[in-house]
Amino acid sequence: LQAIQRVYALIEFSDSTKADIEAQRERLGILVQALLECRQELAHTILVADKENALVDLCRDRFADIVQLDIALDSQVRTAVEQFMLLVPKGGGLSADSPLFEHCVRLFCLTIENGSLSANPNGDIAICWRQVDSLVKSMAKKKPDTDWALRMHATLQRLSSVMEKESQWWMNALFLMTRRMGQAFHCESDVVD
Image (cartoon, rainbow, N blue to C red; front, top):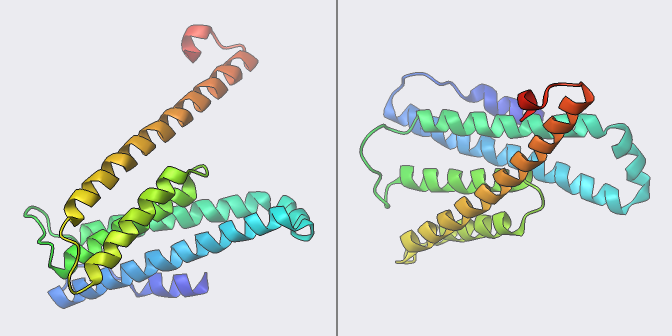
C-alpha cells in the first residue's frame, strides 16, 4: 500500500503541457494496475483462507477490515479512472492508432477487471474481461486483428446484459431487505413500497 501511496502522490492534476498530461495518463495507468494487483492479492488471500483452516480464524477476526480495505481499493480505482477521463480531450473522436486510444482501451480493460472483483462470482464478467484483455494484447501487436471493433462491440453488448442482470439482482435483494427492515421498525407499508 505504501507503493500505491507513493505513485498516487506523484500524480498532479493540473493544466500542464502535452508531455506532462501524457506522463500523468501513464502514471494513472500504473496506479490502477497496482490497485488491482492489491485487490487480486486480497481476493486470493480470502480464497486461500477458506481452504486452509489456519487462516480462517484470522479472516473471521479481521473480516470487517478486509471488506473495508477492498472497498477502499475499489474506490481508489474508480477515482483514478475518473481522473484519467479528465485528461482525455473532450469532443472529437480518437483514432485507433493513437497512443491515447490504447491508454483508454487498456484502462477500460482494467475497469472491467475491477468490476469483476467487485461482483458476485460471475463467469460472464470474467469472460468479458478476458475478451477485452485479448483485444488489448491484439492491439499491441504490429498487425492487430481487423475485426477488433466488432469483437469489442459484441463484448460490450454482453457486458451490458450481464451488468443489467447483476443490478436487477441487487435491486431485488435490497428491496426485500428494505421491506423486512420496514416491517421490523413498524413502518407503514406504503412508505416501504
